Length: 457
Image (cartoon, rainbow, N blue to C red; front, top):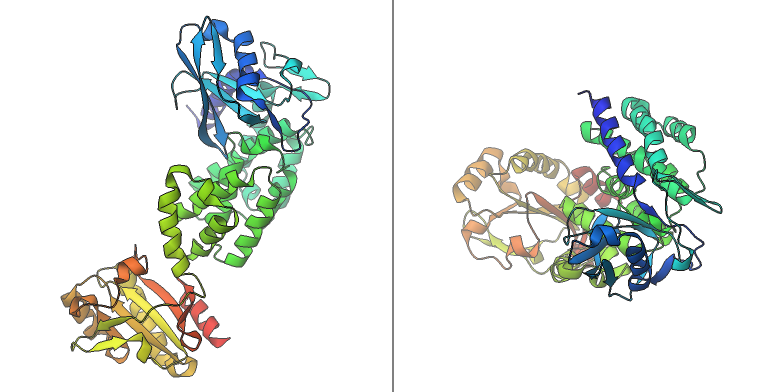
């Protein structure tokens, strides 16, 4: 089966599923899309629509999505072909689904887009309904956007040129102002876009395409965040996988994005988890910003305690934090302390002679030290953290590292547990310290070029 045929087969199956979805359309009164409670609204729909389907089951579960992540909402005991949910919690516009097992396979999709269940109208068997100015035909849109999916997938310039990407989108967009149609449109377009990136890891999302997509989405519409959409991974991929380490730009972009969202807590949590998953220390300031500004301890659930411990570590290693006195021993058994360094800057270098990247970068840093230490007024406080005395000694002698402060945890007790204090998961770890400002951290995990630029300011 060809790739094109495979995609169309999946698309047609999806169309059949969506075609049986219960689509509810009416005027929304609340500014953020909050509706009546789960108990009132969903109970109305279930007992009137699905009693024949659920009669053979004892329990029915209602689940949904927050930024594409499945979430549990409520459960109902089935009696006499009716399922009565218990929760009085208000629900928002969004795509929800019923399942017979918690976390199980969806058996019925429900589009909620109303504030008054008395205005409910059901979709016909072909998945089509028109109420006033609201028009919803999921199956039609899925089939229509299959062609757009193919075009983006097979036209290379669509992922690199905002003009090409925009032309394709506009070709297939009949009514971009209608929220549900807009979500289907961009869901399919960005799904194709992400497929191209997955097959071509060297490609990144240009800022121009990201800006275009964000400008076209109504971020205040909760349907975007309460659904399973490619919009969410597209946003997180741009912000975490685009080799952008300019934290000021990223924080500004994130704040602008969240300011337009109806439920910023959902997206802030989603981005927090995405940045955490990268394991990239350069993103730690962004983690801390999200955690503090958007009150994430209230949103992280079971992960809140682990996140707090992580943020405590990040906070003490953030720019402006003061490091304690650090000590370790050299190859002659002599103790050295960071408090004895009198240069303007100190580069802390935690490394492992068994680490390939350390083997590559340590001589590069040493060459920088030999050429520019006096000019830029810095010292290197290098600590081997793997307790591998023989490898450390051999590597140090081979590369002549005795002219900087060359230390190893294998030589004696240190003032702190370096691996724990500096959250060393992989090596090397590098920090730039300002000795004239009480040994405060300027930055962590900078490139050597960035370190030089910082010291030259």
